[in-house]
Length: 123
Image 1 (tube, rainbow, N blue to C red):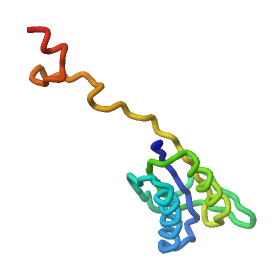
Image 2 (cartoon, helix red, strand yellow):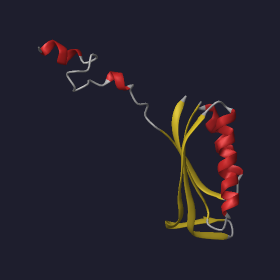
Image 3 (cartoon, one colour):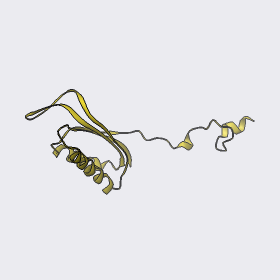
Image 4 (cartoon, rainbow, N blue to C red):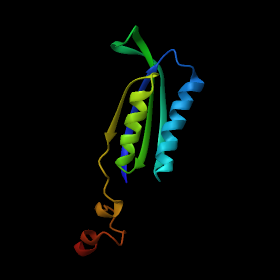
């Protein structure tokens, strides 16, 4: 599984319960595919850097929400389809995070640590 940050910009006219519905649908897709949601952050309603135009509308502010999750790359195709077909979503992006190395691969600086071979051989 890969760690992704999924950022969504939703119309400011969308009520909070519908915003929750978008998050619920996205989270359900991830969980049904065996993924794990690690974080959900709402940045509230923010003024946009430039206006977004959709047919017949101009948007100057929007709700911004970030969801972090681990999932298989194939799940993103389903999420892309959901975001494209949902008229409430203005923009979205999925960013793949770099995988972190396990902590045991980092050298310890404490000479009392039995895993730190370099510190043990100094003596």
